[in-house]
Image (cartoon, rainbow, N blue to C red):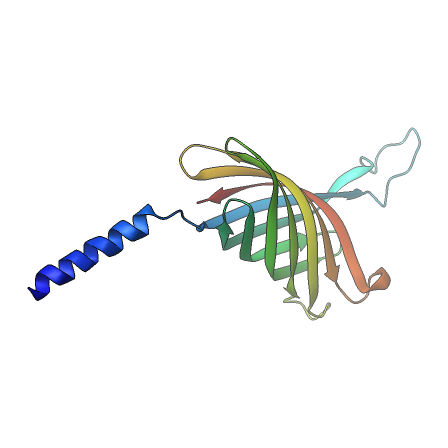
Length: 179
């Protein structure tokens, strides 16, 4: 009799949990961004030995995991590696992010994301600082649970020694999210 009651309770719990609308779903994400900058050695004139006016200046790698609520709001914990070769800065940002899906059509969304956290620098040239970011993007639905993201982000890194002790940059990126 005890086994029958336990079996019935297990069936009821399974039925109840599978029949309810799911509130959200976990996800894993990653992206790579690059920043373009002005070539400080560029000179206008017929002698173009100094290269082009616009050159790549930084590369950012990011990975994270989070939870999406009702396909509208997502929170995540992220970490990454930033390389600004013009200034010889290598940093490891760790931050939390809040993403809001502005529009949704089929499996694609347009979103805005806000980031806030800490930036760790392994070099003694620059101390650790704060990290902030805001971005706009498109998440295009793919096959199964893998989505592609395209984004443009503004990054602010608190680094002593720069104008106003901040290094600001705008980056363009591509990434993925796996639900």
